Amino acid sequence: MVTEPSASALSEITQEELVVVKKLQESYAGLKHELGKIIVGQSQVMEELLIVLFCRGHCLLVGVPGLAKTLLVSTLARTLNLTFNRIQFTPDLMPSDITGTEVIEEDKTTGQRSLRYVKGPVFANAILADEINRTPPKTQAALLEAMQEHQVTAGGVQRRLPEPFMVMATQNPIEQEGTYPLPEAQLDRFMFNVLVSYPTEQEEFDIVRLTTAPRQVDLKQILTAEEVLTLQELVRKVPVADYVIRYALKLTRQTRLNQPDTPKFIKDYVSWGAGPRASQYLVLAGKARALLQGRYHVSTDDIKAVAYPTLRHRVLTNFNAEAEGIRPDDIIRMLIEQTPREGDESRQAAALPRVFAQSKA
Image (cartoon, rainbow, N blue to C red; front, side):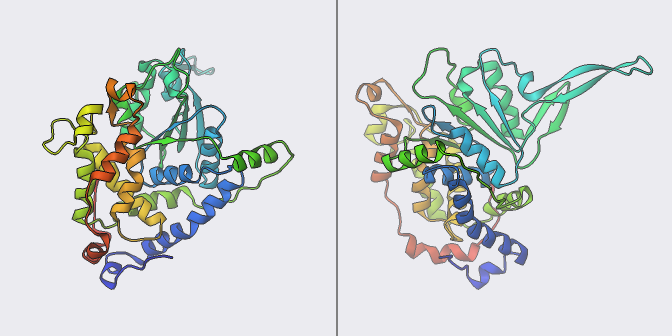
């Protein structure tokens, strides 16, 4: 059920933009249906990936081998008509293997030599950085400029990456030998840390039955790259009330040890809290989730729903937490439970008149 905006809200939106937003709400079910032809279960992972895509962010996929992380990303790219490249990160991978390099090219007729830039696999809409923690920090850092600036600098020349651009990196949580954990500063560049969990017994039964029999799957294209770009702009225009922003700020700021209202369990179990980028991503992800849910306003429930993937890689637990088996998700759950929020129903009317006012994260 789509929540219609008020008359004053509609005046802020062009008719063309409204049609695109309605198409997103209609296409969301279609995207899940198409992905479901190949991927069994993982509905929450699908939603979180779409939120990151429409927010122009990047995500980290964490899960044990065999949970269809690569298949999910490549299938999503096919349903959205996006170019897709998979980069297998290994200890001997060099930065130029990702971004590209200049090669000497000789003109056979004149004998003159010149440098020609050969683009690397990063020049695609959707990039799967498979097992990103298996390569040294020097190579990991080759992605930083691409993720932040959507460009690559080589030979003193800046080259723009195709839009939309999204990096999805995978990590194996159970294998630590021979790996190079991502630095905290680089982890912060990822909007979401998405946990890919084991399937249920029925889902695993369906996986085995489908993958051990011959089958031909035809995927339909739901959205185009141009429509994705339009939706990325519209997500930032979704209204958000001040009390929702303050709720997101409170969640983030309470993870920091030097704040006067920091809870005791944060001081006991957290060594480092989330920075301002977490607050930005909480609000931006809440906007995208509201649109996917068929609403034109953001509620605190949207902030709560995206708090786990946004904060779990930004809240660093200390030795006490590890000794007692307390994970970042446990910290976030306790934080949500003890953080008061104002009633969405009484505030929703105040949010709607500012529908689609420009908001930049």
